[in-house]
Image 1: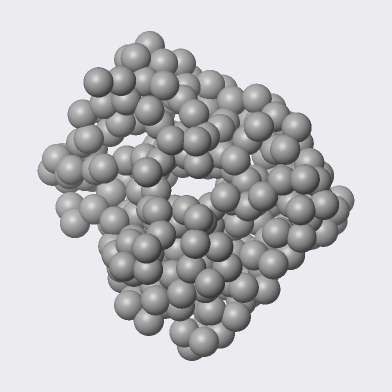
Image 2: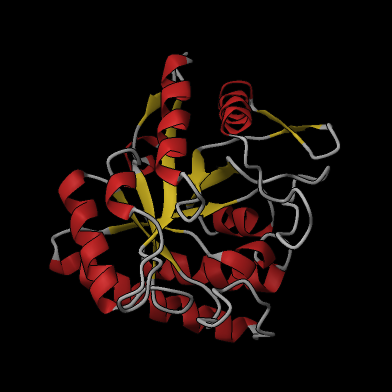
Length: 256
């Protein structure tokens, strides 16, 4: 049976005149994009430009909401209540949804960013807040998440879930990501990243930083667009997957 996978990256993560990564080049390789919605990065002009190019190239558009942490790039715990998380997600999604509608497109998935993305995997109240917001916004919405609380809450709400495999991040033995503040959290060797990604997609296995095999049911591979050589790395990952017989296609086109 032919394996199908989505390739996604976090895009639109500039602010004002400052830009992060080469979004235009990445959009020639990716099939989906998590678009920053203004709380950790992005602004109306950048969101508009990113969505316009996604719509032109047939790239799936996803909302990438975060904690209101522009200074810390969404990587700090803001100590929010679940109600604040819910309303912040609604606010950010609504902004992106309006821009997508202007361009005749639709937001097809939601993927929490940074520390919010880490916490929804383990905090039931945060997971329920995000899943409830997503269900009310659009019952057809896909929630991107790691295995954990958010994936469970989204499925319970009747939503489709795309499990994210991260190409260049180290995993703990329990399947959670190694914190970025720890040595070795981000993998730098392109050959190793390609090898790990192909194994994760084809065999459903990835090794933890301690060498423990972890079962991973991966639907979409996340490539970080803000790392050095991101475009070449994304192309290498795509080439490796296609050489292994994997079909690359937008998540919304095939996920059941």
